[in-house]
View 1 (cartoon, one colour):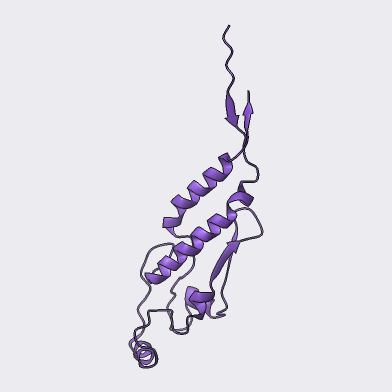
View 2 (cartoon, rainbow, N blue to C red):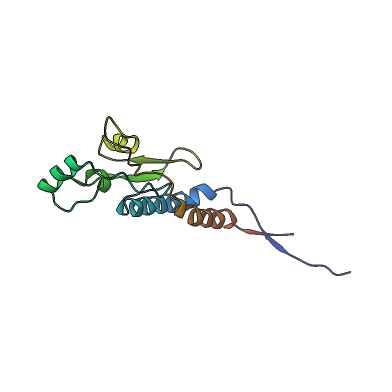
Length: 140
């Protein structure tokens, strides 16, 4: 008779606690990249251009600034953090007008600046997989 001892990973039940900070960081970085590209982070679609009238006014007071950047408050204060439950994240900004840009308002078109970028999903899957399998090995 041959006996074999094997070690198998034990499921890490604390995978969320072990990965949520890194997941939020990934989302934060990838959303900022989408912002710099002036595109919807979820779809990759370019934001609507500024109206000629607003573009002219903006150029007269702050030449050369990209879309959704005038004071810098919204971009510089946007933070993505782990939320209150597994798989949830919260996003905050000090700019109360952030939602108006996300959804559009009046004649202003929506320019979604927050979401889960497709580019994040592969990295996030890897982070979660490592966290789930990060565990003690048990002998069987």
